[in-house]
Length: 281
Length: 278
Image 1: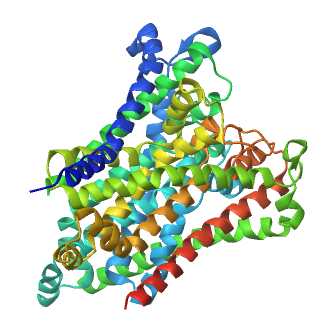
Image 2: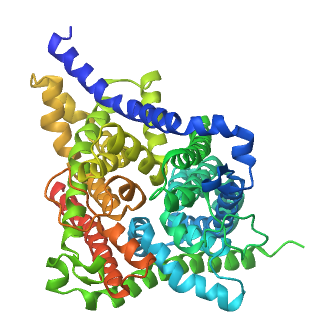
Image 3: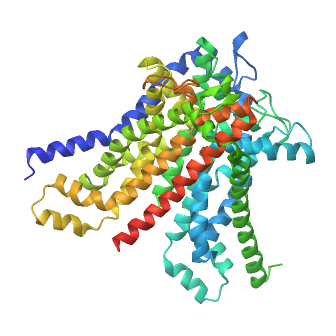
């Protein structure tokens, strides 16, 4: 029989463990309380699909920012996902042990570099390159996509590598014994077998890209307009908050929280689907 | 036409190696550039003088202090909660509804963007709890942000502790709590320390969440309720507003050096622990 004291400690640990849930609830409640009134006032359709953002005149339409966020995130995925998958295959299958022990911490380091440093590096190198070779202002969807494409690498690489390494050893041995080359084994057997892990990795990478603020504030140009090409400047949901939160008040501030709600909902959907995919296995 | 198996193997091998080297090259170029530009700026005066003229001249001592204290608050608050949660998940319960809820919450917290933490910290700590833009508001916001990391790393570390350790503890008549504190936690310590160090790195690197909660005041903080400007925020403001590129490079170099020390230092620590364990 458990003593009273043991039961009490168990309860205390349960309470501590439920702190994650309470904090999550607190975040949700406070962001919604602050942001929902302005959405109710403007109307959700006008807020989400409105083309004009002019807080001083009472226009709160965030559609250009949604397009901005989606386009930069897709761009980041197009650039980052192939590189990330190659790197995880490198780690799981190709790298000699010595190199692996250097490469893995290097990827961790990539994740540890402050996002403002990435943004700064983008302003110094990526933006001028785009301006010089492709034209336009340089501050653009493309610049943001390149920076985010690099920043999402660690997320995708580590999860993909884990799911590749989690595959049963005999998959590979069997395939190699059948005379398949290493690459045939990887692309016809290992990658499909690790598919759910890879998809979850990509989704989490997308979440990281769509949520990034400081790096993209510096390289996107931040114009509130529908972009015509990948060389145009855009503003994302995150940068909208990051730029204007410093001086906003009243309805304007509420509208930034409402922008946060949209971001929050997108992220929670991405998270939930990634969690669903990994659990389904 | 199908490609010859050997040709495709060669092409794939080349592409994969190229991708890996490309990523290393980018990492190296970022770090080398910042260090090359910033290290010449680092002097004793730069590290110990307070910023003058909006950061155009003077040093960054107040930002260094602000960064360290915000980080300390975050780690001191988050670590007990993180380890406690990990203990509950591993030692006190079977997988079931409650663990699913806790895990879902932790994973969701891990995915929430830092700017959303900033919004929450601002409305909850700064406004609602009336802590103002302060070290405390910033530290508490960061504590929530790093909580999932500490939970995940501690849980992984505790799970690797052999079941035998617990059984021996119980057979000696220890209570469950004693088994946890005397045998499980000490052997899980390297992994837990790993999580804490990762979290310190995140606090040092964070900008979006702290700028909205700790503010961007340049003066030397004198209490937990003082506003402060962490190094990452200082770098951001200097670089973005073009106040002083030299001081921006200096601040960035110090940030990068800190991050490198945390990462490399940790790896050395782990190797030492592992060596000791053998």
